[in-house]
Structures are given as structure tokens and as C-alpha cells.
Length: 321
Image 1 (cartoon, rainbow, N blue to C red):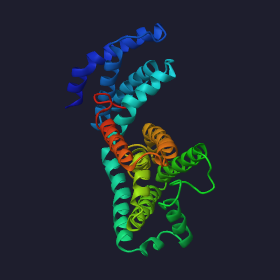
Image 2: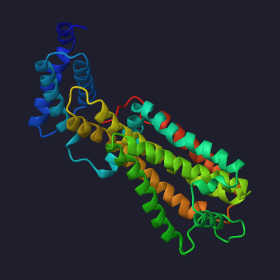
Image 3: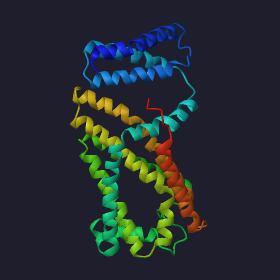
């Protein structure tokens, strides 16, 4: 569509939003039911104008209009609970779906090495030593030995609360490294994803080969839905940074990186929340020896289905903020 036709078609909406914003600004942010939908339309018009490389004058005018709308829509004081509900039900899943290609790339970088190394360690008992030290393998085997009274915890930890803190630190640090290493043109993110896949896959294959299945798999199945998905999401956010560095478009690399970082924020926050949930499940549920394996597997299946359904359907029809 030519710029003139584009302006003629949408200018009435721009004038309507401008008038509405003037009214809202004079009333100090008074609410209006038509405003959010109209604001989203103009945001879409701005994106189209940039993509079609219309005149800088038109783009600047639309950008100014969108900024005014942003101030009215998001800078009003809202209850924290309301903002959190909006984030969980709309912004987080919608942001991930928007980056579906990067998500599947991140999934492949993590999952394929895990499957390959798992198969190798299952078929060759010595393969585990190419990834872990002898002492490391001994510690892993001791943690999941069926003869233990407790499963999956460090020997010096005495309480579930101590393990909860340990798991939070461990999980969040992995997620942050996966995201932040995207600043190295994505090389760091790729390395972290692959290395974590190799690490987890090697342990899974080795312990399965030792027939520690009644201790290892019931333990990891419960929190895996949140922990593994969060690691992949952190990788997605890291790859967003890398994409901005490799392909900044009409922006400079620094400006493109800042833009990518702001767009990655919902993914980073959401992944961190998922890692907290994973730590809670790992400390208080996964390690329990009083719950039978069939029950743990059933709960794990429900959690996996819930996570998949959440990212597929939550926030449909609502783009990220």
C-alpha cells in the first residue's frame, strides 16, 4: 500500500486517538474503554510504517502518538497484583509465542545434545567420564542410590528449606548465564545450552543404565516441566540479544541491543518465576520418599500438560506490552 492511501485509510483513527489522549491527559489519566484497543491499532500502524519505510515525518508522528498513549496506558499507578496477573495471563506467554522460531532453536540446542549424550552414556558405561570426573560420577551415583533414605540432595544439606535455597541459587544462576551470554553474539548462549544438555543427558543415560530408574526419573520428572522449559526460555532471550547484534537493521547495534533487551525482559522475568517454582517442587515434592513413583509420574504428566497448554493458549488475542 502506498503511503498516501495508508494515511487516508487510518488518519481518522490517529485523530481519534490524539483527541482521546488530550482528554485523558487533561483528566490526569481518566479511564476510557475505547482507548486500549485504539492504542494497539496505532501501534500496529507504526510497525507497518517502519516496515514499509514510509517517510520519517509520518513515522515520527506515529511514534510520538504511541509514546503519549504508552504514558497513559502503562504509567498509571496500578495494583501490583493486577500487573502480575496481566503479566502471567497475557504478556509472558504472548512474548514467547512471538519468538517461536528462536524458542525452537533454543530447544534444539538443548534437547538434541541431551538425547545424543543420554543414548551414548546408556550404551557405554565409560562415556560418562568424558563429561564428569570420577569423583563427580561417584557423587551423582550416591545421590540417586536406591539404598539412600533421601534422594537427590547434597549430603551436607539437612532440611528441605536449605535445599530450596540451594536450588533457587543454582537454577536462577543457570538461567541468567544462559540469557546474559547472548551478549557474546549468541556464542555464549549456544555453549551454555549445549553444555547443559550434555550434562543432563549424560546423567540421565548413565543412571538409567545403572537401573537407578526408581530414584532418578521420579525425582526429576516433577520439576522438569518448569526447570527445563525455563532454561530453554532463557536461551530464547539470549538469542534475542544475539539477533540484535547480528542484524540491527536500520538501528545502530547499541540501540538495537537496548530494544532487544527490553523485549526480552518478559521472558527473563517469566523464566525466573518458573525456576522458583521448579526449586520449590524439587525441594518439597521431588525429594519425598513417601510418595509413590506412579503418583509422581502422574503429577509430572499434569504439570507438563499444564505448561504446554499455558504457552499455547494463555494470552491469545493479546500481544505483549
